Image (cartoon, rainbow, N blue to C red; front, side, top):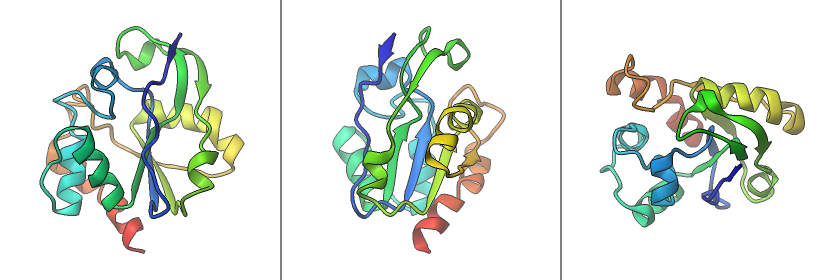
Length: 162
């Protein structure tokens, strides 16, 4: 059983919430979300917000908060082999109420199908809200180019500007 080691990033200005499934080995080592160098999460969001790609934990955290984006994961603890989403078992979900009590979240997005499945199974019945599934920014999703991902993810920016 591995406990999620990264606290959520959010503040009272956050308007969208992006949920992954569970942090990869690289993210757990780095101590922050989307730490694998081939993960395109930071490049996609940087393109959407027309900013330089943030580097390092503090810069990434400031980038998210400045752009009104909250980030966490569906799963708070689970059994997992390495970073393999397909090996996830014994799921305990994160309590999203800490974010909802602080921020006016207008839309929830999930990063990839595993996060969507876990969200729909465990969180949707609990919080009575749906989520928009976006294509995974993981390097395992090689079928999606950076350009296609950025286009698919453009709704993130649209909900913030509402």
